[in-house]
Amino acid sequence: MPEDGGYVVWVERAFGRFWGFQEGWLSWLCSFADNALYPVMFVDYLFYLRGGMSPFERWVIGATLIGCVTWLNIRGARLVGLSSAVFTLLVLAPFAALVLLGAPNVDPAAWLIRTGEIEWALLLSTILWNTSGWDNAGCCAGEVAEPHKNYPRAMAATVLVVTLAYLLPVAVGVGVDKNWSAWKEGYFPQVGQQAGGGWLGTWLTVTGLISAAGLLSALLCTSARVSYAMAARGMLPRPLAKIHSRYETPWVAIIVNSIGVAMLLPFSFQELIQVDMFLYALALILEFFALVRLRFKEPEMARPYRVPFGIPGVILLSLPPVLLCLASIFVANTPTKLVSLAGIALGLIVYVSREQ
Image (cartoon, rainbow, N blue to C red; front, top):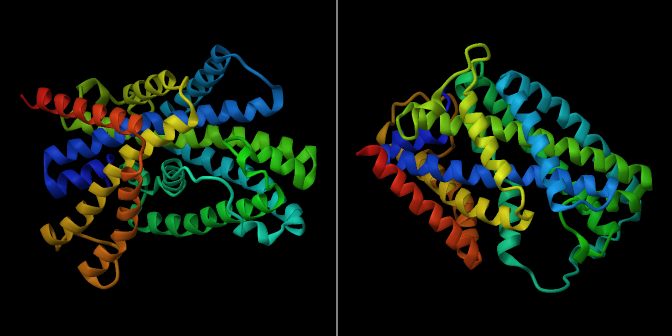
């Protein structure tokens, strides 16, 4: 469906306006928490270079990053895409060095060691977060040339790159640094220092800063299109659908999203990721239901690529991610559930008020 809005468009077409709004609302809410993770990571990596910072100083640095990324997004999706490609190359280089230098020092037996209690809620949220975001690409489909050709090519290449970029550095890292209780966001520079020396630790820190900025830029680009698509359909206030006269971007939606992200900067990485993934899991389940529903509702819809074995194949392909989402929701802690349910309740109020 080559139009901006992605999953909002899919779910609305499959189940109607109410569920289309719920999909958009859940995705919009979780995008605030999701986008806020990257300025928080940016500051955590910066801590490695310059040491302690006051909460206010952390917020100012994070807000400055958000301001720069907002300007880049208003200038257009093409600029965001080009900068993201450059960021990707810059980010992967030091991790390749980490793998090459650290591999001879890895103790494979360490991969099988289990120590301490597992925080299942945080673990599942982190796994889901690390493998999420593929659906965001659909949010910009109206601004992509020949999406029926370019999306499958981009997805195939990205699956390979992402798998290697996660698996190899983590496999080497946990074999080099076995002090796993110290591992947290922004910890790879310490691992790099052990594997190759201080220069690699510094390089990984700079890479972490670039990575956080690049991911924030790409996700702001896609999340702003969600609120824009909802506003264009009358689900959210009309000003969010305003297009910039020169750059043809949803500039009001971009700025509103940026302000919401800046307000969440005082929260911790762990708090943000669990709320983010609780809401995202609900939205993703709706997307998979829409995928199956549209096979029945619109069997003649143009589909440039196929899932093998027809409708049974679609259902079987959907089961593993849906089960992971359900597990993540089930084990979420009480504060995460309360905050998320409050957000869902607010969405119902907004929907009723907009539809009257």
